[in-house]
Image (tube, rainbow, N blue to C red; front, top):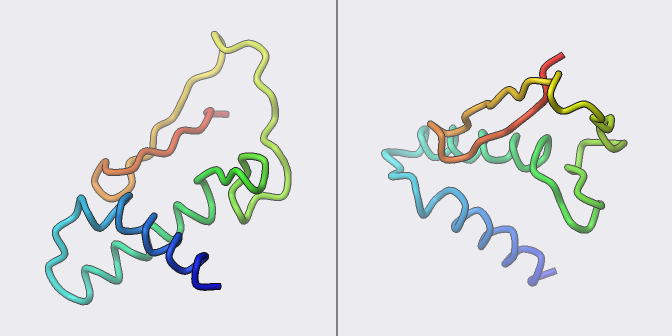
Length: 87
């Protein structure tokens, strides 16, 4: 169990906390909550075949890339970017 905790803490430090200056406890909670949402709802995980923890199936395959537009969502002021196809 210790290895799992160290991996989670290390990922959080490398991906977020090493790049954000935390002002106070409320700011730290806000930053960590935003990263938690990103981690659980969007970030791909190798152990789940590139699915986020809260996804139950692979997204639909896009065959004609020229007709689809990509929407970028900036998380934590652009530190993390999420990309989705628009409808």
